[in-house]
Length: 638
Ligand SMILES: [Zn+2]
Image (cartoon, rainbow, N blue to C red; front, side, top):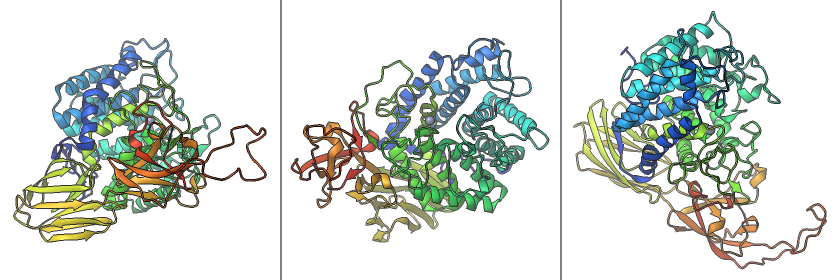
């Protein structure tokens, strides 16, 4: 292990930082919202992904490549190798966190098959460069070879930081060396149409203490934005962020996952090379994109055609794309910016995205998933056929697998490592960023600090933190007060006091048995959109704590049509379970069709045909779990 590297099980470990994330083995979840999702991921989703990729022959592509049997048809898209790598990453975190023997054995078996497909010079891809296939790197715009390699490197990061160097890490090192030779200063001056190699190289370089990998990541970031990629179909260079150099861009644009993976890699490069101007540019891009191109759920991407960001304020709820992977990628960027700056707004957006994009994707059994996450479903979707591959963007129902199936494995690796994003350590300070029950034990400068966190958050807003072990000198416990939590309070050794959104700090010599209690106001509240978001002008949403709520047809009285709902905002929403109750009414449309285009010289007749009724709203992340339904987050105001 070289200087500057860490053996801690961290997905992201900048070399220059004092502030670090919490390692997986430093935070043991004990049930709760995220512990439950993590458990379902462990017991169901990992196996589910493995089964599907075996069934479809995506894993066998490695066997065929090893056997020289590549002339025939190849199942899967050109980027399907990346799904196996994301599953391997998930297995590495899972084994590292729990010691699960199945996860380790499965990882080792997959590693053997992957390794057998690697060429002598380190090149590793099952779609290009072998008999009957197109040449290596002959289609940088769409080939995804470097994208796949980036995911291999991230998988190896998970392995080296949980288990140490092994065969997978060796395979990844040879692949990374190949990339550095092929695309180095003297090599091809190309970039990959789908960013990912940047973030993979940067972190793998950190994990192995290998500066050449960071240097190659920097080259890829610098090369981007000069229009060198061949256009794909009708999409212009902004689709893959090749229109403007990273440091010069104002906001994220084009394909959302690409834009966000690139930004994550660029933050890594900026932080580790001390490139302050680049870091400031990325902070500005984050701020502008969050301000104008981000949904209430934290979802990103308003366009289906290119899975991309729209213009400023282009946030239609029904046409929202909000790919699950874009939510994951958004949190990858926000987490890196948090570690670089310590600013609370990054953790705030992560919470929003965790509860309302990432948590929305998996079904309760962890075996089907949302790919797109619209905020308005007009008609209930038909149930999907189990055992069949589904079109990726069909909304309204979770599907077991997709034609392009990037989201399930991305979810698997994220849930397997969730607590790594929940807290941070800096000198003699421990910062809690996300609230989940469990035990934390970290080494501060002054010695170990161990805490037990008890909470049912986000069901209730009380978080009780008990000190189990602490250094006998002053330490700081910092608590994130979410941006929505006006009226929070903290009770500690110095009594109870109000806490404003931002940080609440408890300092002192903490004795075992001492408790700190955080109270967050969880009453449902109305949330009004910016006037410039045309698509939801005149509407309001209801949130409860970090959770966005929605109306679903299954909760509506039979006679209340969801497309004509109006909310009476004079009546404050009332809490009920993990949702809320609001007063709704609806206006009828004429029974008889009037013919012609649906636009008239005069407003349609007014009058409220339905008396106001109480209607239950439920967490958006649970929608369509009781079968297909129509749903809406934004409610027109009566
Ligand atoms: Zn995806």
